[in-house]
Amino acid sequence: MAIIKWEPYRRTLTPFRSWFDMNERMSQVLDSIFGENGESEAATWGPAVDVEENDDRFQITAELPGIKMDEVKISMENNVLTIKGEKKHEVAENKGNYHRVERCYGRFQRSFTLPSTVNADKVKAEMENGILIITLPKAEEAKAREIPIKGK
Image (cartoon, rainbow, N blue to C red; front, side, top):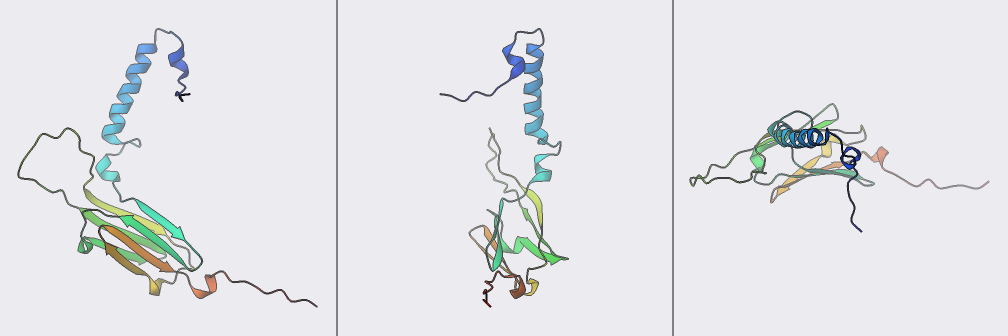
């Protein structure tokens, strides 16, 4: 059984059906140019990021393909971790005719508000093969611990 998207105004034959179809197509074109929130794709580009937590640390993993380690800056201020960088557009000598361009270029910035339980003095960052891993250890008092129960 196939799943079909429900479109209520397409089920009925109305004089406005072609107008609805045209409106939908124009919305798709504008979304592809400006993004769904009205901003251009270049303005909203940012690397894909995973944020993981376990008992003793947080870990932020960011995909930064094609970006060199010295083109990335990481800072932390007032419990906000910020990753900044720029992916430069590679200019090829053979200027072909593009049929589709999906790779994004330009500056990016991602910020994460961290809990006060992060030990800022022990934050580490490593980068290999376009993968940035930031390890944010938790302070000792923030780590989960078992509390023994005593009987009377």
